[in-house]
Image (cartoon, rainbow, N blue to C red):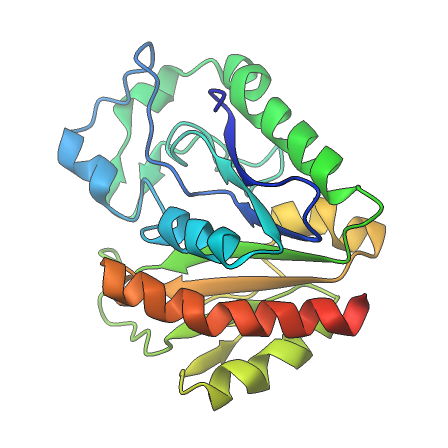
Length: 238
């Protein structure tokens, strides 16, 4: 593991899982000015993603790259010039330490190496399919009136080839599936725009509801559902 990312499984596997927000790690030389408990919340990490990614890798045929630092240090799923790249506010929390952050330093230490490795892995000639794996909170602190009833969301920008295969399969497995919910991939799809859509690579963007993957039983259940769907997508593009 480097400071910027962690690789799981065999990089020669045909399926690549990309998990931008899998870690809540904050390097010792960075002080966000937050209580430690906040780092266990959704603002800091996509709860359950690292564990589900590992279970999918254990099923075989996959490798995974996990982001190595918290999205509060730098958000890998943003364009490099995005205003939210190093967030100062996130769902009711003020991240005081980021108000004076050296953004160029964080780009060089974390963001650029992560995306260089994603580019190298995604660009392998044997790679027929990518999975972007995230999770979402059942309720935002800042917008408690908004219901988020979906078990899983499927996100995409212009390329919906993987989504059209996956959505009916996920629904048939008993999940409540959101098509472009709880938010649209046309707005939040930076990593897949860069490494998949820009190159015509087929992919699937999945968001799991965090209360469904907050313990080992839930993580095993979702991995057991997603795995066959991912393999069906791979078969369609092999």
